[in-house]
Amino acid sequence: MFEQVLKSRRSIRRYLTDTVQDDVLHKLLEAATWAPSAHNKQPWRFAVLQKAFHKENLANAMGNQLRIDRTNDGDDSEIIERDVAKSIQLIVGSPIVIVVCLSMSDMDVYVDEHRSNAELIMAVQSTAMAVQNLLLSAHEMGLGACWRCAPLFCAKTVIETLKLPQSWRPQALVTLGYPDEDGKTPSRLSWQEVTKWL
Image (cartoon, rainbow, N blue to C red; front, side, top):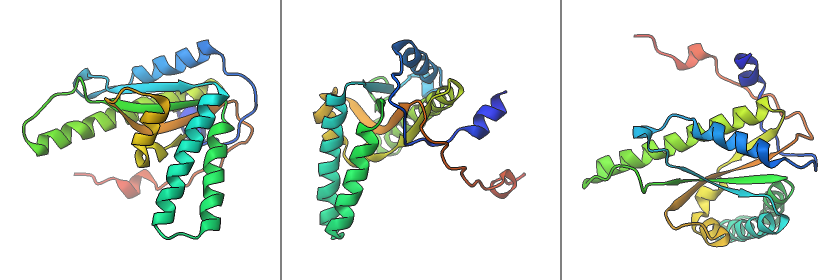
């Protein structure tokens, strides 16, 4: 039942070492591409990392950028190094990492800033809906996953490290694998608290 899938999904950060087969990944990516999108332009793009070499390169590059940014913020060096190590482990400890990007190449073009910004937001929203499809499908198939937005803070680093097309804008990464934890039950505001009836 869909309601059970929806309410039982959790953010999973620890995974078993079991391999996620390619046919399973294909189904997840296909589910992602069935999300609705603005003008049906389907701006989502996915870079799938399976090999340890690629995950380590990305994790270390993102970790280095995090270290630079946090040092510039004036944060304590011990806390920085702890957070960098945790960030790296989350990536390298995941059987699969999917870097989710968007491309504006097929989106509408406007001469004014207001509509251009709206078009970008529509692409972001469309890409987020694709991620939601992916997360729910992964859970329904017995996989665990966690959506992380860290690539937004180091987009250039991600593009250069993975040699992605310059038109791809990193939005998030999804770690994926068979779960080695249950995940925490999240708190939620009731629908009554966030709804206004007119």
